[in-house]
Length: 620
Image 1: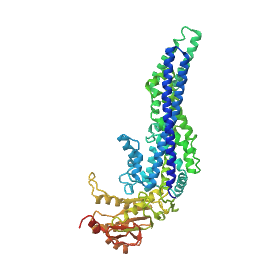
Image 2: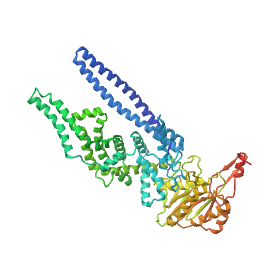
Image 3: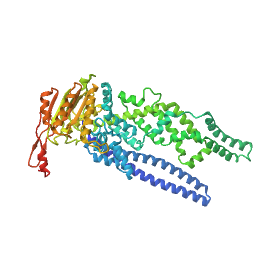
Image 4: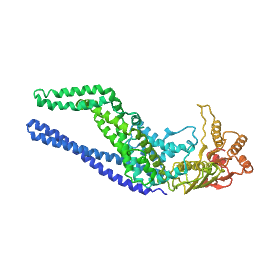
């Protein structure tokens, strides 16, 4: 599959045209609102001054027009807000196809003014909050950060979706996922890739709904909420029925009927004061919910109306073991929260409650909803999280110049799974137009890669690791073909010292390498990636240490790649090992510099460009 930049370029033209249309309509309606409001006030004043009732009616009619214009204008503003976010989403797709990480950052902070908001937007884009120090491969494979897999592929706008996608990148090292589960994910991703309009609609809707906050209050109430007590329910009934006394008093005692109105108001005020303590938990539960619930309702509506045929996606949307669909239970909750919005202003809330026991009604409806559907809500949020993670996995097929679904080794035998065969592999974080593709095969063996500085050794082993991680998410990989086993991935590449932990670079590397060696004792399939082993010590120790590690990793359920400049170690492996394969990168020299072809070739390279590079920078 190839990325279709033209599709998004054409989409951009349509969005910009629609934005211009609705922008003009918004300007006209804004003017109409102002004129109608001024006219209604002017007619009311004129009617009062001239004692002409007809002007009151005219003013009332114009005021109704003002309200109508407000509703229409509100709808237009919603469309403008949606299209504004859709334009950002579409631009992000084009930036991903071009591999332009700076543009992705610019889009993420577009329109933001406060430094705090800009910082939060960048943090959400980079995913640094999911970074795990000491993880098997997180830092080495650039999972998170400014130029990372997460910033390139994440299209989830919700807190729970972002978290699930991050977990899908982090967990292949412990995942026990089956081939059947991976194939099911691939089928789901394949259908998602075929629906780019739906993916953009979903993401833009989530952005408008500001789904970045964790729905903790909503989940807490769903799990702990209970029905209101009978006494509270009686007070709702009493607060409403008391108003019947007003017309009854006018009929029976006309002279005292008017006095019943303040009496009813006082009674409802007393009812409200009495109930504040046990209504508070329900009212507090509503805080922060309305936008999240409405956004989730819209998102599930998009999903339900998208006509998915894939069984995994349909099961996530509908929830086979749940009594009602997500849309149905979220609609009921949304109705209650719309009632709660009437009490958003304290003074207005007081006025409403002394007329009608609104707080009691909200509490009753919230408690009833929690008992009926609260247990289903966490499942629906989990389903959204998984769907959004699959949407992120689908990005590989939408933004890379060439990609394919990987095949997996069908056997569960650990030795069969120590396998990686990729054709035309590309590193997804390099420029998509100029990246050089390579083919790699390792089958229960170890590939030692040699070559000069900057020739492409480290990039190659990163490419193998990244493609393995992407494959385990169920998505496509940037390759023409890939077959692999289900392996734990471990790496030792970016080694840094730590003053805080009193740790040298060499000690830090020893810890990483020992972790890989210890994992070899688990008798489970393992893919290791080691860059310039034991670079922080002298040549003799480096050679002997590397040979020891290679012997411990020479097992039928382990495969891996190692780069090195240690030719003494290579000479010894040529005789003592039968499971090592040799590959290299080469270069050519010109008067103006070094030319790298970045192509992996069988054999050993003993070239070194260190002296040449030092000469270029004026050393030696």
